[in-house]
Image (cartoon, rainbow, N blue to C red):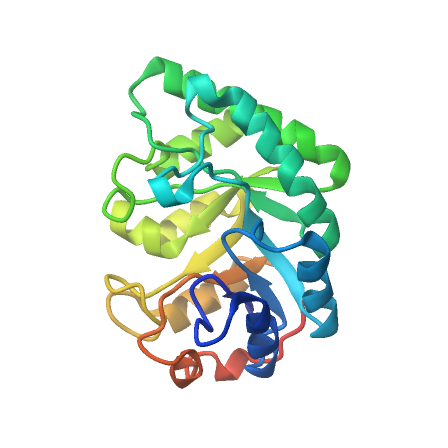
Length: 260
């Protein structure tokens, strides 16, 4: 049975961020993820997890100036020093939360630009090797160009080939089913092919990015498929609730309380 992690950036927005840990636990989640914790002290985030018996499944490394449209800088050749500093910034949060995987964002750049491709290779390898002694995996995630126009990493095959080329044990694929369906389709076959390198999975309905309870994909089938494939990681609920978060959790009730 899949182990679901509530995405506290997108879910439970009825309450302030630090109160969403309690809200997620009360709804039956045993794990959480979010985009960024850096507006709050690391110790406070860790304390909320401990208080409510939650496991931190994932968070993103610092992306640069998010409000100004930056989406990371791993593929930006002139931002390597910022990339290195972002790893240092994230480390106390990894230690305080006990997270085992962090997401490295590529940034806005052309995948056909040789300098961007070279920078991305270098940054990915650097990040994975930086976090390896701390027992953390680094995951990279292809993101569709409809949601994030110009995002460098917008192809699952490119991500797979890079991971297989680098052969770094703690470098994994973040397989967001929503993004995969928009970019490529054929989600089940791609899950089967890429399962050996997948470190984290995320879900949302397509095309609305709401609760995974309808529209294009048959999520009950996909959840069973994850079991058939022996996936033991987390499934992050990275969706925008249609209304109040708890009103849209009928799909989740059969899985509530599943321990990490």
